[in-house]
Amino acid sequence: MTDSFSQIFFNKLWEHLKPGGRDLGETIRSSIDFGPVWNIRIGDVTIPVTGAMISLVTSVLILIVLALWLRRGLRKHGISGKQALTEKLYLIVINLCESFGMNRQQAEIVLPWTLTLGLYIFLNNAIAVMQFPAPAMNPAVPLSFALFAVALVVVMGIRLLGLKGFWYSLINPIPGLLPFNIIDYLIKPVSLALRLFGNVFGGFILLQFVKTVMPLILPSILGLWFDVAAGLLQAVIFMYLTTSYIGEVVEKSNSTAEQIAQKKQSKKRQLLEEKV
Amino acid sequence: MDKSLIALAAALAIGVVGSIAALAISKLASKAFESMAKQPEVAPRVQTSLTIGIVFIETVAIYALVVSLLLIFVF
Image 1 (cartoon, rainbow over the protein chains, first blue to last red):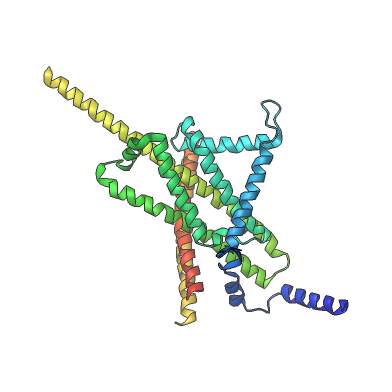
Image 2: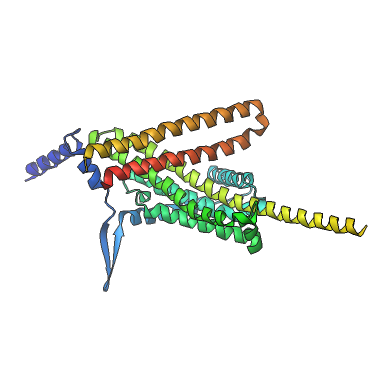
């Protein structure tokens, strides 16, 4: 019994590890499966659980554990290595916000949201290296990230500048450009989503190709690049662009306010000259 | 439809756009490095706008990648 079991096991293993010998297109095609892995039944309601959902929840749990670990033992003097790392990360994002035209106070309001979004997307991409399905491979996931990012831009614009300030940002150079500024808000999520989706999906297809052709050592090394490094790059770009959109709103609003103030001043001057 | 034609279309989509995007990024980067060498004091600001420019060019290339992947896996 044991003999036949080990024989079957090694036969299966060899079939899995054998270089080539399988239909390439069919293997890759079958690995793209967005369907539910299992169903949770609560009474009459069935909730389908897809691979993307599992990875999303897992990365949330990792993020929570990481946050709890990082907040232990915070000190003012004689800081530990992890605290120095966190502070460095914090300062980098603050500097990024300030370079896009926000002041320190605004940057500190925006930072928790953008940094969390960036870390979450990074974890979602990097989790693929542990053979979880990368959630961004399903086009619905990057689209929801992008919609959240654009909603964040609008909400932050209203919170930092008030409704009037946000309106000023919409009518920046001249009021006639209002429709184009609104279309801009519709195009932003599409470009954000497609960028993330294309990168992750492309990396996944390439890795599947390598796994099919040469399944021994190469996929794990290439996975470090395509999942972790490219995932980090995409997460940074996503955070960067969200911050730049918020900074753009702030800058546009400031320039419109300046224009209006200048107009008022020149009107006052004209009135004074007429009186004289 | 003929499978070979689809494969050719997918290869052309990513090939043409990829080469042009690479040319665009090289031009952008060379100009940015030139200005950084001329005025090192504005280097951080040039770097920020260089990154944004590269991201926007890369977006076009990734659109082409998405189109060619869709061509392969949908048809």
